[in-house]
Length: 174
Ligand code: AMP
Image 1 (spheres, rainbow, N blue to C red):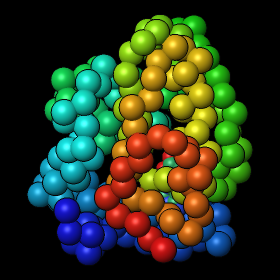
Image 2: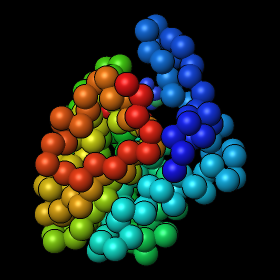
Image 3: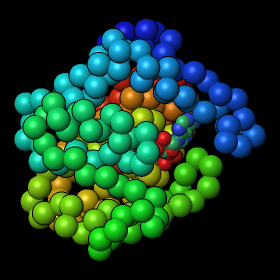
Image 4: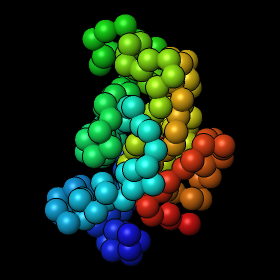
């Protein structure tokens, strides 16, 4: 995966959604057939020889990448969502975002004890979302086999929040 080529498909939007934030807009990447395919393939590639039972997508942009990754790995897809969106019984975790705090929810029956889980999202920033998702998986008895992110904001050191796990990112911004 050519980092410069992938970066060329990501648009920086200044001061969105708040002043001081540089938002990484991946919609140009999604709209470019070759870049989207290459991104999905590259996210899944390190886990191709690993047993993966479930791939988690984190609302909302994580869904877009996690769904095709789960298809490619012959795994199930599980959504982790913002509060109040899931209709069945849930587990909930609080997390700190680059711009605020929020809650994440998962269906209690989405992961069975002993299942191996890959977590996919578009961006790792502070790592709070990823760490909260790992806590949800582990509370349900699942094991996190790794994380895959398209973009890593390296200057926020989010990896430190998920120390000890396999973390795969395609592009890093220092
Ligand atoms: P964090 O918990 O700080 O690692 O934030 C990760 C989550 O917030 C991901 O679901 C991203 O989609 C979103 N996010 C955080 N910062 C940015 C950013 N600068 N550009 C785009 N998305 C972001």
